[in-house]
Image (cartoon, rainbow, N blue to C red; front, side):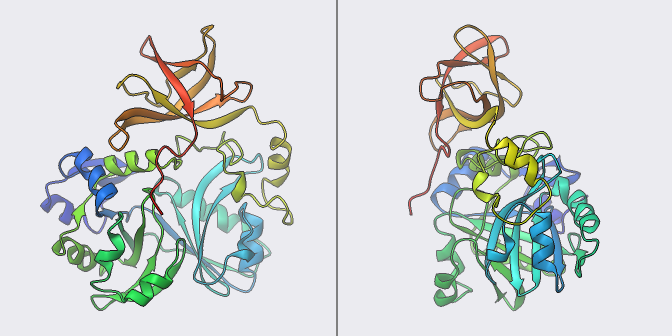
Length: 358
């Protein structure tokens, strides 16, 4: 499938790639340059492949509290929450961001590869609840501006009062160039930034507005290295049906103290007997530890596996996220990464690798 901005990407000479069934821009030039642009200034992303699923009705809060792992009742109107939908065994069906638009109106943003699955699962779980579920993924577009100068650029169209009041993980309805949009202070880069939800009929106008203002377009390659540096999980790598939020170091989003929800019992049991943990890895070599490469200890025993790896443009070193056996002492671990038959020395570090200055 093509996003509503496909022609814009072609006109910008983007290198296109298939991602979750969508034709997406991998890069427009140098992926390293694009990465550094976001870290130093601001970049523009087309995220229209993501899914937007609306949930509204009298039982919306009760329903979402049963369907998702977090306590959605605590999310205030105009705020957002990073959360997860799990199966009965606690495995991650998808990680999500839930926006509370009104008292009983919510928008759930799902990963492109899982949008249909999430919508179907929510509909299945809605029995006996007074809720309506609408998958509006195909008529809702999403673009983002990310980087330390994102707010400064946005001042060209949005008042300083609105931007100042828009805290991290909050949203507000505004007009951009006469177009009604939902503006959210959320992102997937580790930088300050904004995501703009808009009708597919008007997304080209918003994209062109940002391009004409001098904001550089950024492809998926840089988006991946940015999120990796920020220690953010990618579904299909750090998360899947065999991995729970407890494994992924995301116990903070799981409300084990709320009434029953799907996957709760499994997550309660797992929290006391976890067998592996998501960790950061820094390599002494510039070679890249790809997903699926093994971690081995001094005795040559496999003690973990890489889930994502890249050379970090910001840090100037090769980094990776990996699942490491819980029995391994992370503070004293002496491990290597098996890169195509060669053991490359590495050390375990805390996530995230990069944290922006506040």
